[in-house]
Amino acid sequence: MSLKLLEPITFSGLTVKNRLVMPPMGMGYAHEDGTVSDRMIRYYLRRAQGGVGMIVVENCIVDPDVVGVGPELRIHDDRYIEGLRRLVRALKPYDVVVGLQLNHMGRQTTLGTPIAPSPIPISSKGPIPHVLTPEEIRFVVEEFVEGARRAREAGFDFVELHGAHGYLIGEFLSPASNRREDEYGGSLERRLRFLLEIIAGIKERVGADFPIQVRLSGQEYVPDGLTLAETCEIARHLERAGVSSISVSAGNWQTLHYIMAPMFMPKGYLVEDAAAIKSAVRIPIIAVGRLHDVEVAERVLQEGKADLIAIGRGLIADPEWAKKVIEHRVEDIRPCISCNYCVDFVSRALEARCTVNAELGEEFIFQIRPARQRKRILIIGGGPAGLEAARVAAERGHEVWLFEKEGRLGGKLHVSAAAPSKKEIHRFTAYLIRQIEKHRVRVELGVTLGREELLGLHPDVVVLATGSVPTIPPLPGADLPMVAIAEDVLLDRASIGRRVVVVGGGGTGCDVAEYLLHRGHEITILELLSHIGQGIEAITRRWLYYEFKKAGVRLLTRHRIARIEKGHAVALDERDQAVILPCDSVVLAMGYRPSDEMAFCLEEGFPVPVYRIGDCVRPGTILDAVTQGAHLAAKL
Image (cartoon, rainbow, N blue to C red):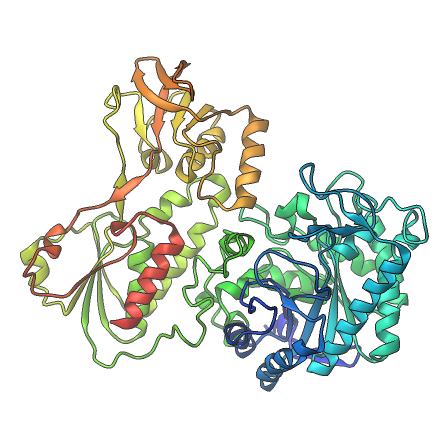
């Protein structure tokens, strides 16, 4: 059956070869001065080669005084045109329609005095923004118009005006942030005036034939924020103003999980918003929001709920997403698990990285090339590091044997996927297993090799990916029957009572708490730090905190465990005062240490080259394990 995803679409003088859109996503790859870097060009080029029909280049700032988080593309001066032109020229040979998103961050600027339609800070601790005068508003309109002129001169096919996510245009549109009483505030028509003046200015100066796309939040999900009914009316006004298309997102800074949905959000969670707006207008609508499953994306188009599909983080995870759909290789698509670590890196002013894609940010530098000499590679450990190393080594043409002491592959991936909000991780495990089967990796389960057994297999290289083991401190009472280890709980290998104290509020401790909470247990979390969720990306951490508070989880931060006795645990607060915690079970989630399994391979004089990757070097994240596995295997 032919897929509607792969059908072309024509609108506003643009012909898009398929319905797949790469939406704008800030990646931190621009130069510090806001110019285009070679790394950025390589990043976009891989996605253009991967077959998408449309690329909207990320968040380009129109005002010289606005500062975001980390390096941002800029377009407030003609000197930026040449770099942007290089980017467009690199992409155009691949029959892709290329647009540029123009943005002003408004009160979300991170340095200097923010500006906004009204004196409403972004948060209770944020600075009061400067309220734009009508004259200043006209100046900002001019900045957007000039940005569009420069974009067209650089060769872009269209511009997208960022009216979503609580940035300046969105601040004017939303009654939650626009309390003005002049011609730019009050009624919906007056709140729209700023955006409509930008559109009119672009059409007058840049050309009525130059397409303008607008990104909107269908709903903001905050008190007094934009509702779907209002956004439908906004869409009608935009259509009358000559806008070519609308991309429908959601949320603002207060509701970030609607903008960059973690894995606990349902697939296609914004589709009905797109469908409602599509029913209000006749111009094309782009749907977004965890649509990186082919079946889900195709269903949206078949049901007429949108005209194009934005595959954002799915293209970060696999730049060849579209190509694999075209070639009927859907099972080979590396799945995005919506872990949001790409977002987390950028939010900390770092360059984006991806948990499942070690190539991200190193496109055309990190490459899987055929091996010059075929080797027999023995990999010990079938967790994320070992599986990724096996996949890459086998794809390069090596003979790969993978030994796993347990009865299944996946290792700590199964522990990570146990919490109800993290089931998506199972998809990545299944992908890795499919790939090593496809590349004919020899897998031996339930096997522990001794020195002579290993050497008897005549390996050219040995890779240790033996993982880590839980840290169990010398804690009085740790050997009591009421005490369990976190990963035993998550793997259903422990019997747990109703009242539970979880010792350790990091990632594993939060997983255990969520896992047990969904099974009806009463939870207390002890955490030495001032907050729970250390190591969890910020959006999920915030969500977990509110979920725990809502469910009545007792959070004791700045507390440490002192001892465990029958029927209770004893903690010490920051003043070393004892706190008695009655409980039926205590779960230790106190971190991991590297496994010393197969240590004989590291002895001096061992006759085969040995490499270590993943948690057996240093316990870390899935991202760390996958990156180390891929990079090592690419060099063997």
